[in-house]
Image 1 (cartoon, rainbow, N blue to C red):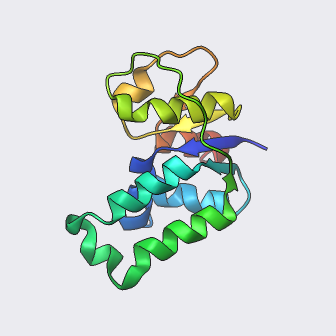
Image 2: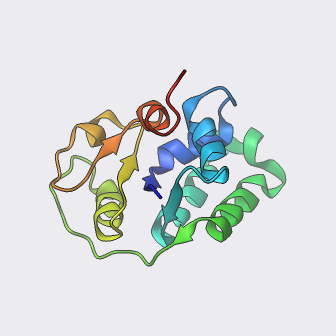
Length: 140
């Protein structure tokens, strides 16, 4: 079974985005058992924080954002937060994603962040949502 970490930007896009877009389709693929989703307390906390932003209120009113994060936490593989291993990434706030992906031996980190996808860290594959989706559900 393929194991994957989804960047918070992908999870937020899945939550607020259209059903025909790759981030939302990724969540359907996960729920269909096409891959194992790995999360950590830090990742879930960041997701909850982002979903609390006022600009997302129209999607998260009536505690929908909180309920969604709780559902992800219950259904995904939840691992402890890893120790940080600085790799000199331009956004130090994403260092934990790299550490989580590497220390939990996932097959892929999925991100909408082009800088993160261009990062070369030994033993870590970083793909866009569309590229990962194509790799697990090739078009006919």
